[in-house]
Image (cartoon, rainbow, N blue to C red; front, side, top):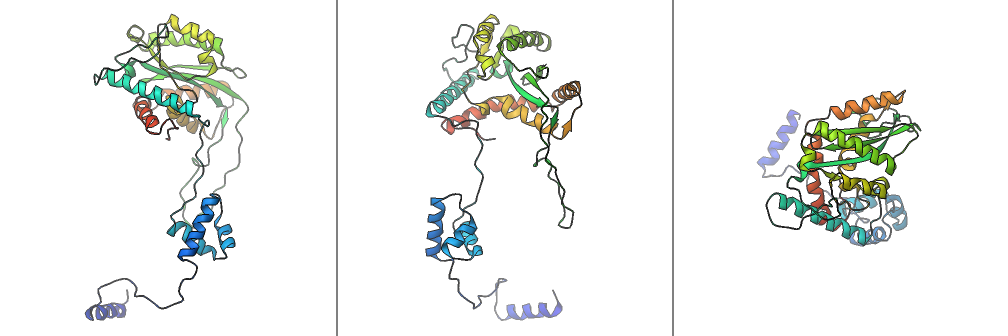
Length: 333
């Protein structure tokens, strides 16, 4: 501030001024931002939630900047994209999700000694049974496609820049047609089994049972004593998991199978916690051979933070509770 400006402010405050804000000034009064136009804008938006600011201004014959001010500042609207969900859930789906989440939470409360509730979990004979160390014995598994060339997402390619910095360019890249299917079984301590199908093959009931045989042997080697304590397996309702051949194989192991509601990837740890970070890690990578891709997959699964897998398993508790609070609707990230 200049010296003369300082003297001017000292004079104003000496005369009794106490505010640093601008004094009211005379000028042309606002004629567009009034109660009538505000009401009309609100009615238009309620009739068509996708209407643009430009369309509102043309329809009401008011300046675009006025329409923007009414929509954002006066009415408090903001335009957002619809949230993607895997499936339009019916009331029966939502009821099933709530019921299963409630039973699983009751099971955890019982394991902690909070209260005596009904045992849950499907045992070898189809009856519900209990296990006193649910998350210590819980193993989850699922399948996912992994491409030899996975493009980097637009979000992951964002960079910091100054106003004068040149704009970076990103060329559109398609995922490669060459891909392999990875089946991953993991618990709070890490990955127990990573099974990769060759290119051109996908999982079916017979292959899934063969994978379960290798999975059982992997448990014996990597988690000594868990087979004796009792495995609690959590997998979704995909066709290979629910096929008759698989249902005939599972009782022979004596494992407990946690109930899982249909169309619920938000309640499956592999979907909401594991595969997302994996795909982001592979974004921008291109592999010449299938062996190179498999080597990168094994390195990534062997090196995550020590708490990564534990957090994924433990977050089931909060997701079950959120599912109940949302009356069966999908749980956001």
